[in-house]
Image (cartoon, rainbow over all chains, first blue to last red; front, side, top):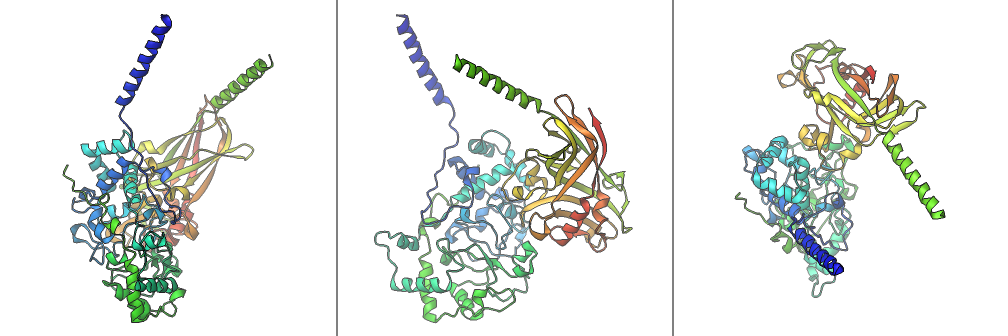
Length: 347
Length: 247
């Protein structure tokens, strides 16, 4: 009898403890990132900022919230438009509050977890630190970091979202940057036609023109625009005539090294047809202008890339085939993904 | 019986280790006194004169202290766990730092003036390293190791401003400075002894030797590079232990 009572008591205790268990508010849910096997290991160390459903959602909200700018007019998404692979469609130079204009074009945002350095000159050395530049730059969002943190701490909705993603406590800049990094870590593009062909997906096949274009690409472009990311992450002088109104020294601005004069980061060619204008100053509106530059327009200066000593002569039909190949790098799923699209913030 | 003995031995060993760890606890307190050519720093009001004879005032004076190492009597080094302190003239609490330190006798202390290269490339940081403290370059990632702002009639910048933001953690313009200060008496740290060190930080040294800085030609530094390195080479001489209280 005593034994029976003890068993009953134990059972009751067990059920009671389980019930209590379900009352406990669940913590942030892990967010799984499925990455392609043919890509290298990501550079960004996600073990230091584990992706969670709540963290990614918070980062997305911050990304699209114009209150991150001083006068609440400009969000990250204002300049990084999804349909243009998160570049700024039709705008040669970045611009921001008070009608100010920056001095470089807006780079597309994708596959950032594989990027070692950021910006056209590589001045930013970490994905988490990247948003600090546009947020505080007077020509972009022009906000003071301390003021932004105070603003977020004063917002009940943000306090609750931050608690949900990072646990209880004050909102600080580290949590803001980690949330934005979590969202940016989900902005990945690897499902273009090119990828389907490379993975031998059923029915995926280049047309003759695309196939020819791929060969031209491999011969003339691939040493800088290295597959599968379509950039080798290096800095090169590609022989553009200097833009006298901007006087942009490029990578030299960061390294103080005269060997880096006029060198800029090699951009990825993924989604390139969707993200004009091109080059660090957005000078070319049409990809054919870019082909013409490499074919006939390269200016020889002391820091010119050795691969461009003789330019990259292309016939008119080669340019056309190259265009068809570059089109296969467009990732329709990425530029229309609902998980990345703009959200309208009403509270 | 054998097992019993073994367990007892293990227990004794564990307890001994535990006690050992407890004995290690101690604190070292450092108070920074910011001065100019020996006189206490007074923000905005005092007129100082640099080695080139130019007068100036100071409105902002702050610097990072990190990577503290204690030097034992036999000259062996004891690297303390990573800690970063931002000493800011306008924040009196920041000028007194309490360093958890293992018990022992130490003859000198060494520290880095600035933030080591690892932390400069490790993404978003908190507390003293939070970019909200205004000691971080966003366009060219990296910490401003030390900052001095003010005015001088000799400055040709707008409003005669002086803006010395010194940083750079890599390559030939690496401005990081490791400073070692020998204590006039040995520093004895234990659970019951908490040595207090007072260190003068003299802003005058920034512009003096070995690189004479004239405000007329150099009044603004806000990038890593040759000028920043010149000032950093000067300010490695800025600290002096003026007092040790062995409590």
